[in-house]
Amino acid sequence: MRAIDSIRTAMPWRWCSAALLAIAAGAGCRQTAVYYTPTPGEQRLSQDEVREQSDDYLKIECPRLMGTEKSATGEARVRVYYDKTGAVQKAQILRSTGDKQVDTVWGALVARLKFDAQPGQTDDLKPAILTLGYSCAPNVAITTLLIPE
Image (cartoon, rainbow, N blue to C red; front, side, top):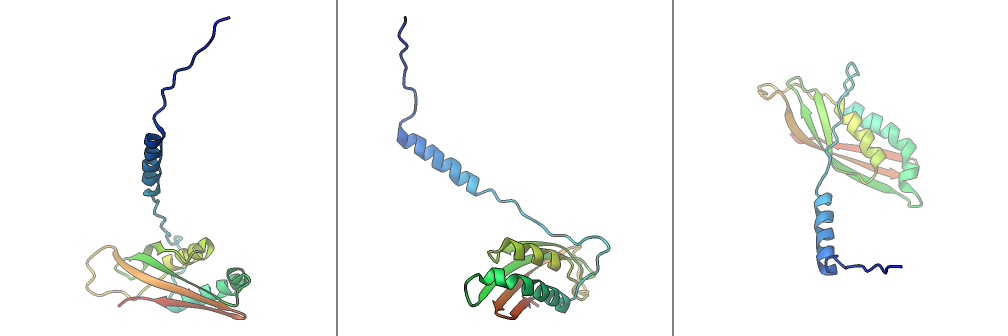
């Protein structure tokens, strides 16, 4: 019976680890942008209506968000693109609250937002960045919405 020999052809560990780190670093740089768009025909919301609907949602979610704590807060930054009529056409979460469910609901609500028409707006879509925040405590659920002027 013939003996089988093996030949080592692997790179030294220092090169393997450097290659793996480079691959991992490159993979971490890829990020998919998620945009929220309004459903055609769905009613547009004023700023007050966005806050009210978010408050209603938070009344249900605050116990989960608080967990064993006495309170919970979160804040997100959202980029919106609105048309000449002031209607938001798409929204993107730039900075998360840290809770995917809240981010998803806020993205959908903000995509339905309608500002006052901006006289003199020449761009088909104009960007703006909004800040939304929440505060939860027992029997309290509050949404804040900050829109730059």
